[in-house]
Length: 255
Image (cartoon, rainbow, N blue to C red):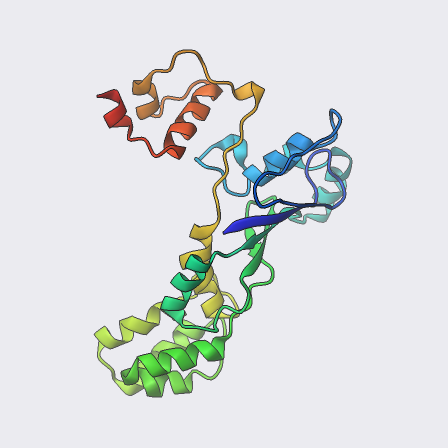
């Protein structure tokens, strides 16, 4: 997935929506001190940081605009921090289509919002459920009767599916080929949307690495400490992230 645009909603010094389109190769942020350049980069990094780091998750008490926090807390809401607009690559689309069939995922541009609870919402994900049923019906002949009866979809699609399976008395090995699509673990209205997000899109979202002059690399680094995850200093986290990003095997490097 390629990041095409970000909309910062509420984050630190940014109190109104700021839309930032991203160039294909390099995007440069220019502005005076305290204009919000760091806030933009931090908020993007917090959508999916490269490693597990408590410093890079949305925290309302630290990140929400100070003048508005009291009112937001009073209302008990979970405001959006940022929305990222991504474009799926051709390879990613082919991977999804090889599973659920063609013409099921209607949009290749996906909008993903991150709230202060660090939950994500997929805002313009459009999946054609009926097209999916048609694809499965044609590829799994044994399940033709079951799929024909799946005319509707709901949060209870797994229960509906298994109920029809019981009536048809099909072999478990056949049912397993299709039942995965109706798990609907997060109780979405459309189970195929939930499946595509859980199995594919959540893994396609890029990871981010952020560091600045406060996270400069030390002159000497203990590889043993990095390998054992003993990262007492913030700069060691940067070193570990860069080594991981380069896909370097720590054990091989030590040898």
